[in-house]
Image 1 (tube, rainbow, N blue to C red):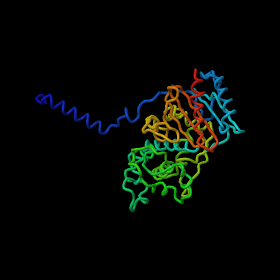
Image 2: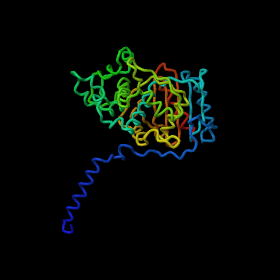
Image 3: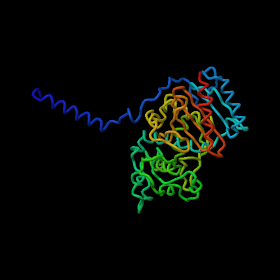
Image 4: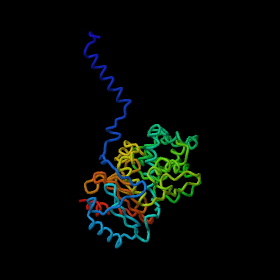
Length: 362
């Protein structure tokens, strides 16, 4: 061994580096470390601890101004909650709604589905995000189909970049089908998968079918056991399609305080009272931008999460038709919930966050 030329050792070392790079995930690019939350001692599994805004560094005058503006000019809003440092510092309900009422959260459901994909990956029900859609629905593709469909992966479904031809204006057509899964899987391709963002509710619903077949139980049952129960969220109403698949893109009903729990789980990188509910790496990677987004929120897009910056702070958020929001601002230790009437996009509801809530942080 003493006579082996030095350059051979260098070549061997270089080969080992290449081999390791091939088998070890690049965590620096796949799951970057985000703001690490402080240690928590008080968890809202049973219910939220309430506190005055000033005790957690929030300006109550600005929050009162927001409350007045909602009552004066935003009649569609049903509730607004603000959590800071794990304490419910602002909670208002409008139009006779109250804390016990579950709200239709619309496409906020998509971000719940994203969390369940992360859990399924961690537990090896799914192998990788590069598994192809055709693997889970071979019966839909047994005969002739657009050959580009074979290139669609779970990653493309999560980033709304499947390339399927779809417009949300045609959403009324989809529920008329007797098989929502087949309707979604049979959409034509107009862009190569992964090339372009296109908001697509039926394509997101395909992930419910993927998970149902992978975990061999309904999406609702999988969510109850692995997500809702640990957070102390009672089994929610969650509609199913004509074939019995839990709707993976919409149709979930949650109380505003339970929406805040889900946001708080993400703020804490998937950790809840000592239990890692969602892998921290999944929280990180799913809430970073993967593609330039667009309609309806005009923000970048992660894995079924929107990502933007408000007042200089990174914010990621789940959003639903009608102006439903769960927003997380890690640098400020903030979780914000807004529920609203499902009667239009109402993206103006989101303006309350940079207009009042972030400026309220002292």
